[in-house]
Image (cartoon, rainbow, N blue to C red; front, side, top):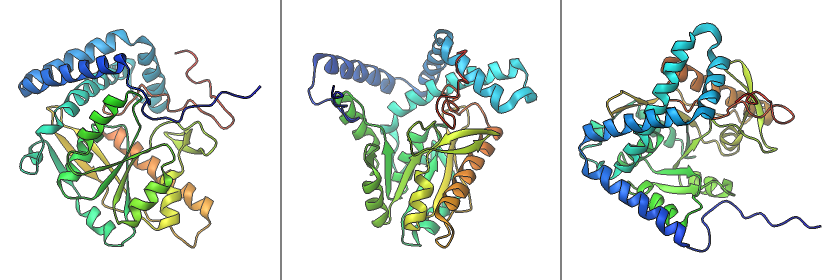
Length: 319
């Protein structure tokens, strides 16, 4: 018996009543957020975060398993609980902040985000091969992308498509408002190579578990984690240097955009697999350092260690 065809990820072909209701609800909520002063939006985000924390028992357990794996006995149970609570509040704030990105423009964005080591972009693009910006589900990467667009950095941002075609178009409009182009992840390698050939910066969020056959196992906080080889492989193929950067929240709705001062560059004369392994390890090490410095803005509720060498690791079974 033939297997049923699997629809590739992306917007649904037909617009349904459910799609329209979903978009209407989002626009209504977005309009409410845009009318409120900043202090009220912060208060709403805190309440939303506490509400999500109270309801999300399963994901609280996933976050606790991750913190146990990463920090062991370096942190007390109380400290781990506080990190999880702050994580929920932070991402609730980040969600509402994303709905107000329209307020950012070339005259005011510096009041929201301060950049450190911004010169690495000019340094990388001067080589003429484009550049890869590797960040993580940390802080608010949507604000980072928006600010880079306002700083006239030629950005092409990797993103996941949304099933609802109306929401998909709406979110694409928000992401592209500052001049960024969007590359959707399904069959994206050719588009990435084309963007690099135009000497653009391709933004990739590369910190999540990878379960497909292309994964490589790389240490992350002392545990083997299924990791995407894509940034390292493309850097090796094209000569594009890699920039690492993270948006670090200050706790008041503003961010520090921290870019590592040293580019990561592939050695074209080295063995390909060894070089991909080396670069991927370095990417994980830089993310580790940032998380250790300020842990709560990372997406702890994600099953980062779900996949092992041969399949599911079983680490999250008790969640």
